[in-house]
Length: 193
Figure 1 (cartoon, one colour):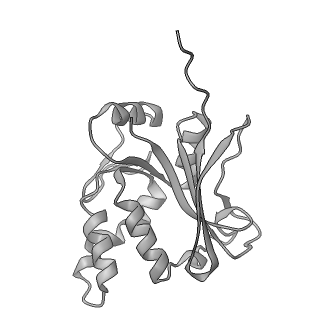
Figure 2 (cartoon, helix red, strand yellow):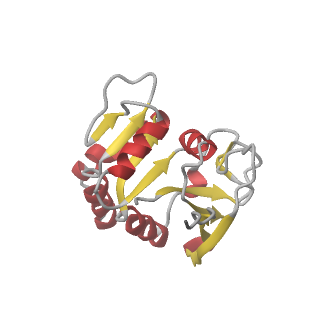
């Protein structure tokens, strides 16, 4: 079954965006950009909220920019054909290889998990991830922890009504002091009959 993953850059104090809406501190250096490019190769479909979708629209035409370096062209070549599902109550159309969600988040994920396609189901954006977490739909949390304290903003981890146990799967230090943490949600094993 396809895993649902949530991967974002996060400040050491737990925010993906600072109180002023700034996230420039997550601008990737060359090593982090390579890491994120390799991570997106594992994705079969990306679920996005409206704000992240609009931020990522840049990549729809980025390959036409003559100043784009080879690593950014490679990212665009992977990102653009990747199927995307956009969750929005205000958009009526989307561009590129994207479609508007036909139903709720749980229904979309259930349908996507049932498809024989390969690759993870990635969730982008804190609000969408918070909804998925509240529904118990996230299988892995992948945080790139940046060495900065931003003092508030949009949290990486949604506020849960209940405890969620995690299993550490991987850690590594990436350029510029960024630490990558990959956790799998610990789910009880099904009862044997």
